[in-house]
Amino acid sequence: MRRILILGGTTEARRLAERLGGRDDLAVTLSLAGRTLAPVAVPVPVRVGGFGGADGLAAYLRAEGIARLIDATHPFAARISRNAAVAAADARIPILVLRRPAWERVPGDRWTEIEAVADAVAALGPEPRRVFLALGRQELAPFEAAPQHFYLVRSVDPVEPPLTVPRATYVLGRGPFAEDDDRRLFEAHGIEAIVAKNSGGAATYGKIAAARRLGLPVILVRRPAVPAVPSVETPEAAAAWIDAPAAL
Image (tube, rainbow, N blue to C red; front, side):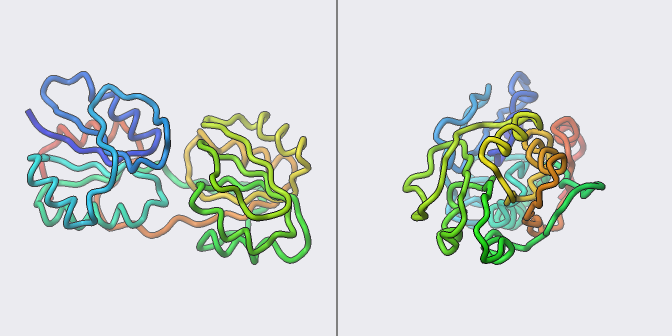
């Protein structure tokens, strides 16, 4: 029985785990960082927590006899992806990146693309605006430097502690988010600008489509560079790779 480790935290990782979970010839483990308090259940064993960097992950791969490693982490989990590539090479096992394609600009989009979340503060400008933040809980601190804005923050889990700004509203939600729902959300709160990461995929594209429909500007964080390892865009392609001949 071959042992497969999926580094997860994305819809694609969950779908791959569901696809592989019923196979008798595989022992699949899904590894989660543990940042989401109540992850969606999957039909395979789940490991929660870090490995201790690339060296720790390589030691785990060897100790557990992992045959193949699939990096299906978030497109912005750059450090984890770098560690995974190094660890796989150290443990001499094949690695594959499963990553959904980035969103592409279409007519009507009003995007300002930036390199990092912190750059969004300057991109918003000094004048007060009503801003929708579609970011992780750990990425909100830079906006405390711009307390003149109103912030509407959507997250899977509560933001604790809340931002130290005078005007902020928090809503909880787990995708998928429909365009019409996001449009109504923006209209209800008088949103004037959106800050988001180019995560790709359909589940959270609603805010991008809604912004286009309403003519709102989007400050969009570009994806970080990823290691030069084989990659696919769908769980189906990743499942096919598992059955292909091994190759480093």
